[in-house]
Length: 524
Image (cartoon, rainbow, N blue to C red; front, top):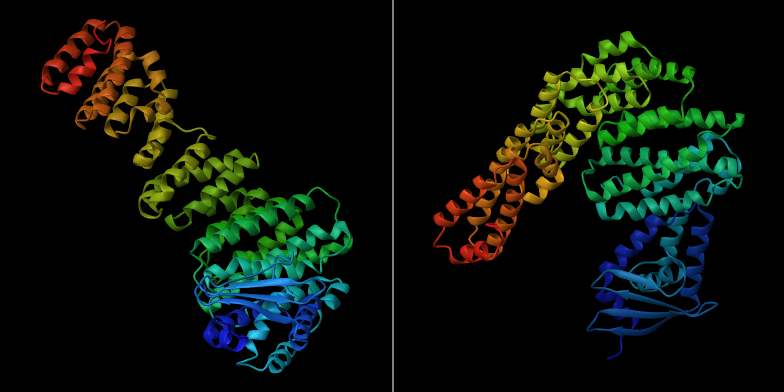
C-alpha cells in the first residue's frame, strides 16, 4: 500500500508539530544563516522539490528525497522520534526542515508560521558584532538566549545540551577574526550563557540536580578554562579593559545567584579571581562591592567570597575574624579556601582555616555528604591536611572523624608512624579482603612486624572457610601460605605447624578443605 504526505501527516501529526516547535526554538530570525535556511526550505516546498520516496507502515519510517544541487535523502523514524539527512551538515539542515514544512502544511499555514517567526527579528547579530563593545556583546548573547529561553517554562533536562550547543553555534558565527579578541569573546559568551541559564532555571523553578546539567557545567568550565589559559600571561589590549569590567560583573552575578550547584559556582568565582582579575586595585574594589551587599538570598555564603580577597590581599585581621564563621553549611567552601591559601604559599592562612574546621569534619561527613561522596572527600581532606603541621592529638582527631570512609588514610598514617599493631587492629575492626590489605600496606607490616599479622591472617582464613565452597577453601590455603611465611619471619614456624594441625582437626568433616590442606605444602 502506498502512502501520501497527507496520510503520513495525519498519522504522525503530534511528532511533526513537536519537531517543528523544536526547530523554531533553535532557529533565530536575527541570524543571517538561520534566516537563509528557512527561506531555502520554504523554496523547496513551494517548488515541489520534496518527494515521498517510501513509507513503511510496519516500521513507521518515512524516506523522502529533496531535489537540490545534489539529491538529499531525509529519513524519519517515528517510533524513535529521530530525523536524519544524508547531507554533511551535522545540525538542522534545510532538507530536514523542508520535509517537516511539507508535512506541517496539511494542518498549519506555512506562510503564517514564517511571518510570525520573522516578526521576532530584532537587531541582526552581524550588526551588533560589527560595532564591538561589551554592551553589544551582551546584547548578542541576550538576543540569542532570550529567544532560546523565550517560554517561561522549565527546560526538559535532555534538551539542555542541544539547546546550549545551538546557542553557542549562533554566537560563534559572530566571533571576531582577530586572534587577540577570540579567546576573550569565547570566555565572555560562555559566562553570559551560564548566567542566563541560571536566571531561567530560577525563574521557572527548573531542576538543576541532574546529570544533563552536570554535563553542561563540566563542558562549559572546560571551555572557560581553555579560554582563560589562552588569555592569561599575554599582554592585554587597552581597548579590551571595558570587556573585562563587564565580564567581572557577570562573574559576580553568577556567583551570588539564588541557587544551583553552589560548589561549582564558588570554584568558578575563585578561578577567575585567582587567574584573570589579578591586579590589587580591582580586587580591592570587588571586596568593597561584596561588602556592600547586606541582604542576599543565595546558597553561597558571602563570607567565603570575601575570604578569597582576604587571602589575596593579605588582610590577616579580617581573615582571622571571618574564620570564626565556619559552620557545617559552608565548611566545604572553607576547605577549598584552605587549599587555595596553601597554593598561594600562604601556609599560615591555610593552617588557621583547617585547624578551625577540624571539629566540624565528622558531623559534616556523616550528616551533610551523600554516602557516595564520603570516601572521595576524606581522601581530599587527607591530602590537604597533609600539607600542614598537626599535633598527634589533632591527627588522631582527624582520622577519627573520617570513620570507616578514611580507613586507607588512617592506614597510611599508622604505617608512617610504624604503629603496626594498631594497623592490624584497624583492619580487623573494619574487615575487607586480603587483596585490599595488600594495597593498604600488608607487605610492609609483614616485613617489620610479622608476628602482629598472624591474628589478621587467621581472621581472613576463617572467613573464607565459613563460605563453605572449594574455591573459598583454596583461598584459605593461599592465606595460610602467607601466614606461614610471616610465621617463619617471626621465628614462630612451630606455632604455625601446631595451628594448622588444630585447624585440620577442627574441620575434619569438611572433606574438600582437608583435600586442599593435604595437597598444599603447609606442613613442609
